[in-house]
Amino acid sequence: FDTDWHARALAVTLACGALGKWNIDISRHARERLSPKDYTRFSYYEKWISALADLLVESGVLSREDLMGQGGDDLHVLANKALRAEAVAAALVKGGPANRDSTIVTRFAVGDAVRTRHPGGSRLVDGGHTRLPDYAVAARGRVVLHHGTHVLPDSNAHGLGEAPEPLYAVAFKA
Image (cartoon, rainbow, N blue to C red):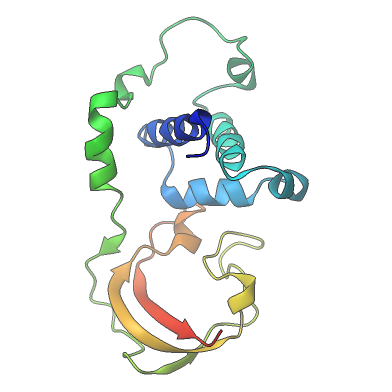
């Protein structure tokens, strides 16, 4: 971390994620939904904190007044879910596994030539979250590894369920 507050930003984000009000894909999408002006001028951890504030309000965990220090002093209803300092290391080691058991038949094998879809973007929600970056849209590549079946972030980010799909590592020419 470049500064102390970067470590605190990560810690607060992890602690809030432990409340169970959203998943990692929703958290990523919250950062992607920042206004273009803010997204381009914010540093990495400023994006995290800004998106976290949005998630806390959107999920009803806090109000805007709470974030401005104008909320009540009562113990929060989620206080018993607080991630304690002594539990952080175990939580980080455990992570949030995204692999799922499945009987889904794979479409591709290691060595197969593939092309990413065109147009890019989310097929599920217009303007929604996708793990396919613009630079890889319609790109040709070769499957180098099949990782099994995993949560589809494009669905999970919008509360549409995990929608497990085969996950492949694909190599593209630079």
